[in-house]
Length: 445
Image: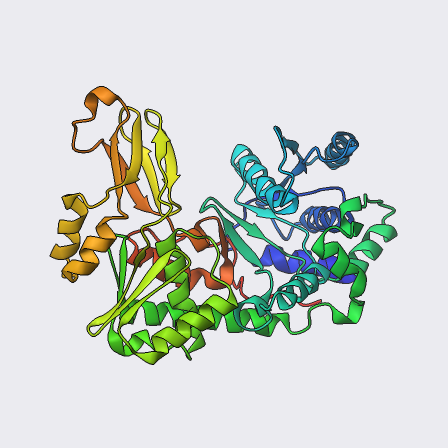
């Protein structure tokens, strides 16, 4: 149904809280080209005053013809009067994990383009077909129940900088192609979409149209409700001390049969451990058994020590694999995946404090048991002047903030309530709201 495409574009524009500039990520494929044309056609009417479109194509330089293809997309946009920019992935490419690296670089370049154009958001052409493939891949990895079953969110905040919106998650690729064919518009097919070396391509070949992601609205709403409840549980039962130790009351610590609490706890653990991803199912099951037992003791999982005592459960980073970070004058960087650190003056080095008194005293003053304070202070950051002549200085001038690993790069819209709760617990600001209303509901096909 080609009319479903333009209808989805109109619904999307109506969802904006106020008109703005939209950056369309366009590769030249049918999905992104259909998105650009549908939005362009919708804006030709007088119903959506104040909106404007700009576009960006990312040239990953992984194929010899990619530069010419990007230039052709630029010419297509120019014919429509839409400003266009090409983002180039320069430098060496990794031999392993190329698709993940390309995805991260794509969003980096799109975010740069959005900033350059003054765009309020980025839109991508992900479809109902892509959603079905995502859910099927997660199910194959054992993530088919719980959070993974919701698939991609209709909105995602990238690096706390810009919202990436997916207006076509409820639209079938066949309808987009029919929409383009009616208008005599062709498209490019990326050969990587059929390369059996890649998981998504293998899965795409095995799925039929009928298998593509039924019930997405419900799954997204369930995920949002789960995140809201997890946020409430965290704010009620968990305290964070100096960004180093999470403290949970003993009565709550063992309630790992509650899926919302379990997800909340392991997400906080990922922050404490400086990880972007949650531990695997086997690790979570092992940890759940330990916590349900109610017995005092310690267990390490995902670089985090779960220290169970009679007066509560304490989470802190294990003392292993702690890095050394060197920063130039006024430079910023991330240390151990846990802290964003900025030099406020000369160059500095950041390493583990290894038991110096400053952090230990703070943790004891916060009311933590001395043993917990001692262990957690061993993994606290210490910034020192990089100049060896200044090595006697106590500390170097630096600004520290906790990094929320699971959400500071990619924040799915339906997890924003839990992300906000965790940010507040770790002394960070809430995440920026999206520019559209009702981002939790996927659009119908």
